[in-house]
Length: 177
Image (tube, rainbow, N blue to C red):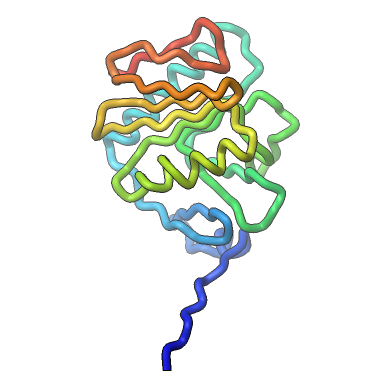
């Protein structure tokens, strides 16, 4: 007799109960364990994060930049918890000691082999429907960046060596070298 296998369903409590040092994201009740990032990933994250911080500081911007690990609670529910590589939040009322409650203005994910399908499909859908204004998928293997400016329904593809315009900041672009 075949028995249907019931898929596990997780909540925020399960994420908070993980052993110290173990990281995971929760998307619609499904848990995704995260491997530690490699050196190349961290170099990219540090470079992009620094470029954004310098731009905001030099222009007296009100937005804040948070690199991973940083909790983003996209929806007011117990089944979604994400840790984008970089989150830019311009509404301080969304922030508290636990993280960001609601959609950040700009999210950047740096693709790793284990996260590729989630970054290009699952998270793209989640971020768009939650109200994220701009989403970048940085793909080190392909040396390219997919830029989704949801508020304008724009999708652009850039190579690392090109100036990549930032949709939420007029006149700001980043060249990944």
